[in-house]
Image: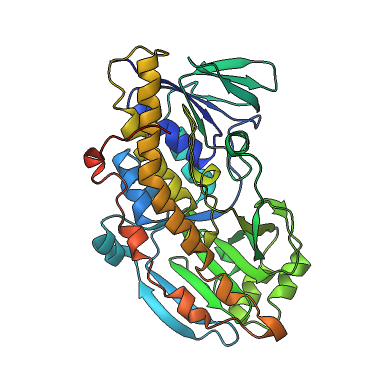
Amino acid sequence: MPKARIAVVGAGMGGLAAAVALTRKGHEVLVHEQAPALTEVGAGMHLTPNGTRILERWGLGEGLGAHGVRPVAMEVREWAGGATLMRQPMGEQWLAEFGAPYYTIHRADLHALLAGLLPPGTVRTGHRLKRFSDDGQAVRLEFADGTTEEADVLIGADGVHSAVRRTLHGPDTPVFSGQSAFRGLVARADVPGLPGDTLLVWAGPHARMLAYPVRGGAYLTFVGIVPGTEARLESWSALGDLDALAGAFNGWNTEVKSLVAAVRETRRWALYDREPLGRWARGPVTLLGDAAHPMLPHHGQGVSQAVEDAAVLAHFLDGLGAARPGSPAMRERIAGALHRYEAVRRPHTTAVQLGSRDGGSQRLRPAEGGKTGGDPMSSLVQDVSWIQRHDAEAGLARVAPGPPH
């Protein structure tokens, strides 16, 4: 059965996940990455059961267990005195509850695990997309180095600043949350009073600090979410100022102050998202992950939603039939497959995206007069189990065919 030639733009988590899912279906996949080398910077991230259940089906269960940490509990602690306000068991209890484990993992470790599933030569670095066009038979990609490529399908997985999204739908305005986040890594040996198996949240009236283990508990990722009155550079990797970090958590309890004192380098991440799109695809071109639905981090769903996207997209592109690549019949089937992918995923990701806006961020923003906007505990314990229970691949065979856009 003929398979499609698929070009993926972007070799971040979403792009690699798409490539893994599609190569597992036998498609010819090339991933084009503008960076000169396949690397992933950053610190830790959450990998929730809705994402890990798919990654385990792809054969990554052993790798996740070796590189990730399964927190035994989440503890919410008071910002000034440090008292434990709530302890929620995780670990085996979450495995039993949701059918898949919850991991905290270093971004580079997951990135390497995904890359390791791809055939050699799948990822082409130094390929910055300059433009693309559709001549009715194939999508033609032109890169800044002068090279070109043709594909039957183009997937924009090029992140929050997606060039593919901008070409399809025009420029849009980032929505600033009014907050930014300091984040980075601390060696646990430098903060011996903090556990290496627990997800910690210190909830303050105007800010919060999170710390969770990665790399077997040898390191803690910290994320300090603070209010901001001005929009900053829309970047999750811009260097942050250590004095500003210390000032933001001045007066907090000794655990938080010891954590901040141990920081050697921090990144400053202005928290933006975008308004949900009314559509993703146009003909044989679609979006995936942050390019389709950039969201705030308060539900920890960025990567897991991209993994779900990849699995669903691969499912529908597996049903192209025996049409000849480039033929009108193949083009029609590709457009129909992308329509069904979007019809399944867009309502779900929109709900997660909009829910993430209220996942602790808005309630922690100071209201007029400097008073808190609400009880931070009410936002920390809200029920998001519907996201974690979701199995994106369940019931896909029953999705009725629909017309292309």
